[in-house]
Every structure is written in C-alpha cells, then in structure tokens.
Image (cartoon, rainbow, N blue to C red; front, side, top):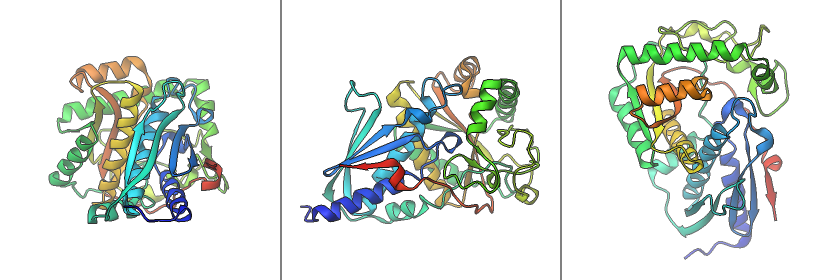
Length: 330
C-alpha cells in the first residue's frame, strides 16, 4: 500500500519528468511536454518542435517521445513505484501519447538503479569509434533488451550489408544537403559556439573535421560550412563499431512509440556497459530508401533506426531544457 503524502508524490512525479527530458531526440528537438494533474503524468507531443520537412508524419518525433516514456517508467521504479502506463489512451486527443501513474510500492532492483544512473550520463556520439572491439555478448544483451519492449534489434554482421547501409546513408545525406528546405530546418536546430540555448545540437558535440569511417557513414552537417565542432575526433579511429538496425513489425503511431521505448532501453544498457551509440536516420527520412531497406535488409519489418555502437572516451556536456519549460502542473 502506498503511504506517501500528496507532496511526496508530486516530488516523485517532477523527478520522473526531469528524467524524461534527458531522453534522446532527433536533432535534440526535445519534442515533448508534460502535464501533472493529481498523481498522473501526461506525456504529449509538442508539434511546434516537429521537423515539418524531414519528419512530416511525426515518426521521429514519436520515437523521441517513446524514449522519454522509458525514462519516466524507469524513474518511477527507481523511486519505489511500479508505473501504470496507458499508451495512446484517447483517440480524440492525438497529441496525448501516454499517461503514467505511480502504482504499487516496489523496491528498485540493481538493474533499475544502474540504468537510472545512466539517464543523464548517456550521450549521442557523432564520429568514429576506437578500435576496441564490441564483445558479442554485449550486443546480444542489447538485442534482448529491445525484444523486451516489443521491437527488434538486429546486429548487421555481413560486410556487404554494412557497405549497403553506409552507401545508402551517404546517398541520402548528399540528396538532403541539396534540399534548401531541409538545410534551413537543420539550421534551426544547429547551435553555434557559445550559444546559451538548451536545445538543438551544440557545436561542441561533433567533430570539426570528421575522419571518414570505413565504410563511411555520413554524418549530418550541422556546421553548414562554418568551422564549428571539436577536435576530439583525432583521438578516434575510422572504426564504424558494431552496426545494428532497430525494427518493428508494424509502422503505426504505437509502433513508433514502441521503437522509442526500446531504443532508450538499449541505449541505457549500452551506456551502462561502456558503449556509445551513433545514429543515422537520413535514409529513413526518404520513403523509397526506407522501403528498400525494409525489403532488402529488414525481412519486411519497418526500420526505425540505423545505429552504430562502439567504445569512446566522449564525456561532453548534455544540453536539456529546464523542467519548468516542459511541465504544466495543475
């Protein structure tokens, strides 16, 4: 039986929302907002932060919000409550993605405490990895974590398939770099050096002159011709690390949220195991390329994320908006 006071529950819910804000999101758009009313957290999509050119259907936005939902659930468990979650609870309110209530009292196990500690430590990597190999047992552990959330993480072990993914990523990046609307949209989320914004991609979070991985996986050009970035890439090799595809059987809004939940569970476990992740979504933003990948490399499942996993010594600062900007308390 839960004996916490209303004030204590309110504190727990605010802490869970803070944890949610540390989820990964496309271009660090942080496309979410939260309402706390009574003992319930409502997670809503913030359509003002959707990429209207790169993500018109909102797939990447909902994946981002699904990752935030994983953090809410994890935080509640870490703070002693079993989360009671309803996904897409009201078809008449499409922006309402989930509601979460603290349920029965539970004692946080070691795994929960470990992952909760990684929420603010996890970082997105935007370069090559060191030559240190990723142990197969760690990759298989991440496969199991994705499966537990209803998605599939498939390691890409064929060198030919890795070359195909690299080539299609480079092709998509080249095409998108010629699209003025996409470039302008990216500029909105690229933070110049010294910026005090708490969203978007900081100039310090990617290499100034990136080294080409072998095979080469193109990165987003957040600098857009400016000499922005850091010099950390010189310490990394051209290793791509371990390549993996995150897929779902369906491609509905619920599937996108599921993909986000699975993605964050994988990323937190990877971080706890000493692994970093780099994402490549360019090809997934182009219908024909995504369909090609679905049929040729994903056994007709829907690709939701292309990622590389590896070992880095990247400990850059994370950037997130304060809770007061995303939370409404009633």
